[in-house]
Amino acid sequence: MPQTVHDPFPAFYLANSASSLRRLAVASGLEIAALEQREFSPGYFGGSAVMLAPMIAYERIVNAFPVFKSLRHTLDACLVKKQIATG
Image (cartoon, rainbow, N blue to C red; front, top):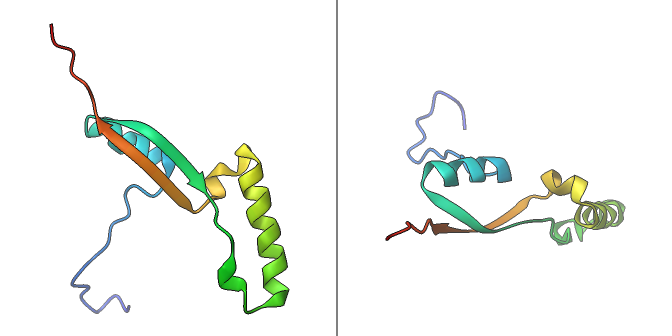
């Protein structure tokens, strides 16, 4: 969209990385109960034999080694409200 056009529904992606999600959770008084980063099968390249094989290899490598966690595009998280100690 050209910058001269008004966007009626602007989007702000503030929690699209594990580190930003952790920071926002702490700032909101929440705890991360579960956090998983995954790269799914590249089926969207199914129409191109030239691209499908390299993307399948990419997906397998990125999911196999923890060092590549930051390259995984799907971020699933469960956040819970912190328990306040009473007593």
